[in-house]
Length: 279
Image 1 (cartoon, helix red, strand yellow):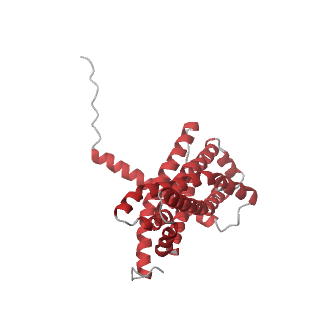
Image 2 (cartoon, helix red, strand yellow):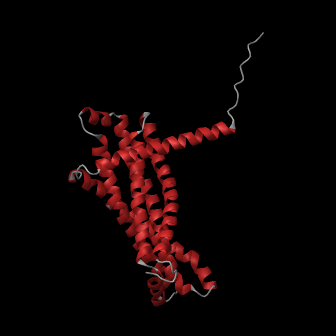
Image 3 (tube, helix red, strand yellow):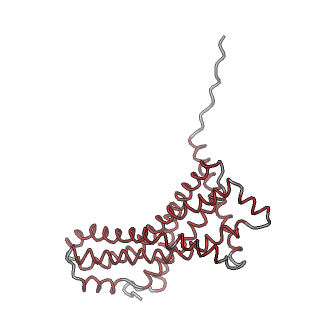
């Protein structure tokens, strides 16, 4: 009689969900432990200027054009999309407050971090991944050097310094283009535009947005370096590490942005219980 092929039992949906959750918890825990390894290294001296300055140039200066384009079109898109709704309410002169508030608190930090996670995070992951698969990281360990101290800390500090500055550039560009488009194309009075910006936008709004960008910079650096350090499988593994660095950073930025937004709002009303008080 012909041999029959044994039928393997199908993995249940519950098992698939359990495996996915277990993998996610392991990944989050591994990234958390990697971040904890970075913290003590931050207090062991300032990175060499020969390493740190080129990183700041690569991360900061070379990203200015992309950030300005992103911020500029965000401001104009906000003006285009909100003009008809504000005009129906006869409140188009208040568009300046809405555009500026949306930029400095949410869209500026989040979209700037998203662009930078694709440009910077992927580049860091690919660079460190190449060093990993070519055993350069192991060579550093063999020479008695700490790879986290020499490779991760300078990139972490560069992201922590440059990404808030780039976010400020994106905010300023978006505010400028939103104002120009609103006044020159849509015909909104410039005095009333800035009057409502000054009336409704406070220093707290700018501070909360820049604080978010600090967290986003740390997230991009940690996840990108982590994926680079755990790259394997040659060129294919390096490409996978770069893709994972962007995807994981983007998802984490959205999650952290939600919790930071909730915390910022609660802290604001804790400091100023009267909602009419604007600082």
